[in-house]
Length: 327
Ligand SMILES: Nc1ncnc2c1ncn2[C@@H]1O[C@H](COP(=O)(O)OP(=O)(O)OP(=O)(O)O)[C@@H](O)[C@H]1O
Ligand SMILES: [Mg+2]
Image (cartoon, rainbow, N blue to C red; front, side, top):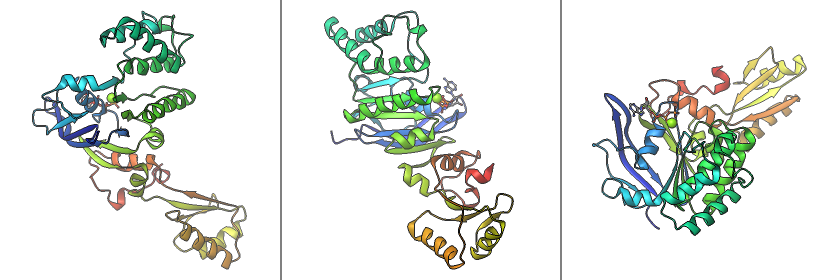
């Protein structure tokens, strides 16, 4: 497969006079994980619903292809290629987990025996065998989410959309879910996910796009995104006020925190810059009690790009307060 799994040009959608997606371009190579980030109401679910044929795109949208198929002219083929796990559970609580699975198998027109085989295999893989015969309403949030994704996989889709797969899950369940998603990718499945958790995008995604005000505010690998937001610094902490004051005068350009006896030196965290800081301390005969390197994380990126209602595509310098400063 040489074409991208998902390719959308000028994706637009409005509800009434509210523009939700204002011409966004998305390209997701096959076999990769793409994460769409954005604040509540940014249009993540709308994008997922359009790409998965559940909602029609705005008429003025450009070409959209999923699995190589034209969304506009061949939605049937798109549907056959994809699986969708919505933001809100598709699990029917009144029937058992196993019955939910078998229902999906029926919807996919799998022969009975094949449906049972796939169901058994997925229940096993998602650690739901013990719960399989219990009504799904008795499942915990994590179990329900696992069942949700298992149901999505019944038809063997090569491209899956996961709308906030781990929202509301505890840290252990979240890690379990990450393992499941990594397993899918190892099998060559393309994953398009939305998330509120920056850490999740950092962990899973090959590429991340930040959606804000209907536009992609920034796109890249986690590292690329972190690089567009300054805020990296080295923090030195002292217990001896005398040492602190000597360091403050030796390290010009450091922001002092008199009360905490700490100094904050802007730095990209590179070996060269660290060495220079240490050299200056050595020369002055000062020893810090603690040295920490803060590299910007995706939270910094998220806040910088989505903080204000008017965040522009490129990040102006005055908007680059790292979150520690902003608090
Ligand atoms: N069917 C609809 N009719 C009218 N407005 C809608 C409809 N669906 C979504 N919207 C609006 O479109 C905007 C984007 O909604 P969407 O659900 O895509 O956001 P989201 O990024 O998924 O948010 P969240 O993080 O809360 O899930 C919101 O302002 C929402 O109110
Ligand atoms: Mg949503």
